[in-house]
Amino acid sequence: MKKTILMLMAMLMMMSAKAQVNPTVLGDKYAMLKVKQGQKYLLLPVQESEDIAAIAVLDGKNEMSKRLNVKLAIDRVDYFVPLELKGAKLLDIEFHGDRRQKGAVGEFVCWKKMKYSETFDTTNREHFRPLYHHTPVYGWMNDPNGMFYKDGVWHLYYQWNPYGSQWENMTWGHSTSRDLIHWEAQPTAIEADWLGSIFSGSCVTNGDEVVAMYTSAGHHQTQSIAVSKDGGRTFTKYAGNPVLTTSDVADFRDPRPFWNEDIKAWNLILAAGQEMRIYSSKDLKEWKYESSFGKEYGNHGGVWECPDLFEIKNEKLGMRNWVLICNINPGGPFGGSATQYFVGQFDGHKFTCESKPEITKWLDYGKDHYATVSFYNAPDNRRTVLAWMSNWQYANQVPTKQFRSANSIPRDLGLFQHGEETYVSVVPSKEMLAVRGAKVKQPTEACEIVIDVKKQAEIVLSNAKGEQVTMKYDGLKQTFTMDRTKSGDVSFSEAFPCVTEAPTYGTIKQLRIFIDRCSIEAFDADGKMAMTNLVFPSEPYNSIKVKGGKATIYQIEN
View (tube, rainbow, N blue to C red):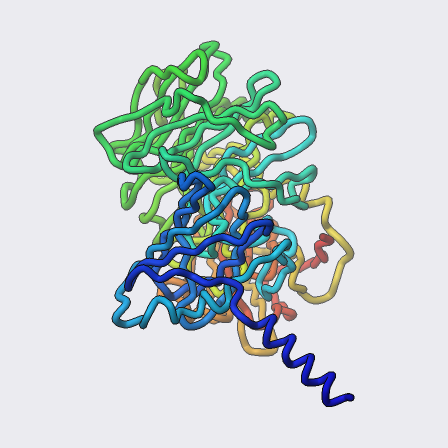
């Protein structure tokens, strides 16, 4: 009897392991798959080292409802991604790459592992997933998009690939928070259409509506809008899209509209090659070109992207300046992507920089701080920003698979003067104080370290594996450095191990250092220096040595 039961169990296991799909192979690069009806998801097996397969999703009338690119598994499975099957009847699949090296399409492992499911498991399986930084529940994420505050809720959209943990299939993902720390995943906000993928953009609140403006990235990059009447949960695309086009540059993207009370109209700044262009509008649909900025200013080592333009006031100093954020890739101070900015004045038509053209100012001097933009309509006239916490040099290769990339902690911007220049200050948002927990004696995988420093200070974080990060403050040279060359896994990219250095624009009295599982963010408590770097230690740093200062460590409560 026992033997019979074991045989039955084995047979059931064999049946359950049997492939759930039966493709029709049409050649050495093509296959079709009829979709089983009544199923919610088809789980697609991904192998990241492979070339993409272009999948056209056809409905019952054989009309294409969706098109996506997935690295379908050839000989091993790294992870699965869900394809929602609502209305899908047929998948038309074209494999890219040299099939002579990969073998016959019909033998690919994807057909054996592909399966139908009513659910998709997003339980965290990653050692390096941050505990208090925003991440997508699965898939790739880069630029933060469309951030706004309304009715007590912070909305964060982001560049998202729902079909893999590397860049592809750009879509707007969506998360919301009431405290800027704890984020709740929301349904997909805006998906690709026949104008192209959904690249970066912004949201504004216009009465009861939320209007998203974004780049449609197809054969050309054009600007489109979509309207939400339910507070940013769902959007309806404008029938008259695109609302703004150009023919003179290929890189024409990342629109940032905002209401300008001084001119009683909307302004728009967007990136065009290696300059920023400024427009005005009465209705967010018809745009008038006003001016351009940047051809001879700042760093031009790469393409200018993800602009922002806003006013900041410093009541204590009696300062009122406009700040133009300009993200650039490559060209950062330590290679790859970074965020530069310009301080000046803006009259609704033209931005005038107060610095000399050759002066470059960086918002953060780490390797992993990019695509910084601010929340629209933040309360109390705050200028609150988030950054994408990675670098295009290695973002696709960092050692995670279920997801890739996190956002920085929220930061508030201000102004300060040093010498004859005006700079933007960066401090952790006040919400970070609310998650301070009990004091602890040693660092943990999620903590804040406050260090009162003298003129010279050295801070070494380490673990039992000999992995370490060394930070040094030199009050005489007015510099702060962070060395991550021995921080843990640095093997995935030659560009990753590095030492980053920041000017401190005067002396530092106190440092605030935020540690999460895969990141270190260091700030001058007064806001004159910020540095963000990823780290991938095999186990958490649980030891700290400080010379020239005194450390207080707070556990961060998530």
